[in-house]
Image (cartoon, rainbow, N blue to C red; front, top):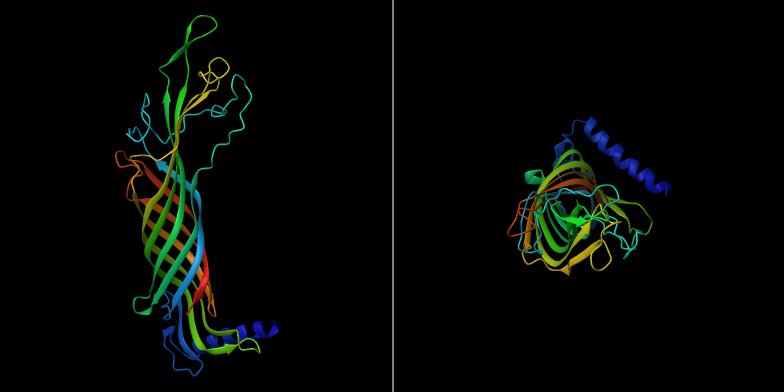
Length: 317
């Protein structure tokens, strides 16, 4: 362990000495030890290919849909919207003929890509890194429609209006691909003669890098699973009114494929992140924002915006 730390410090010292002797910040060096050195703002990466596995977690997925109508759902009295009309506690599903909450759990919303594979190419000539991602993705989102036009006959014999909400829960799975470019904005790339870190010669250092970057990419995803659940729910008169099944909720679609679901989705992604490489081992973490270029539905404008974190670990050669 002490030998590893000492050798790592030695590499840093050699880089510093090279810069103090007037070696340019961005150069293929003439040193017998350093073969490549680029540091500071907008460093130029050395020539390499990287292979990574990783995942993405969404912090926030935002739906944009207002007053839309689609033939893919059961008919409703109003129009679909991304605005949630439920007040506090109104969306709790009740047991038949009871004011007690049912055991049904509402599925979580959001986006994730639990499995991602990446290949990236350092392009020194362009001071950029080109990368290609392939991933398995999941997206879960809801639309709502509020109807206040209906009335029921109260115990006092008077027509009483109530709030009825239609809900569309859309669970989708994709196989996606993303092609993009990242630009290192600050950091260092160092390539040297091999440094031996143990007596078995199994761990050698030839490359070191640490840099911040910005990037942009085009993301395409093919829909492979579409499970839509549509139900209508009494929101505010649960103690006085129930459907024929005794519940405040009636299911109209259950895990059915939406006939108007767009088979291919397109997004434009931007990101900012940090990547480090030690020998052949590499790690990256980035914040991203994904903006839709196509609708979820073919006959209505339903757009999904995503914001989250991606991480990846792999190796360079």
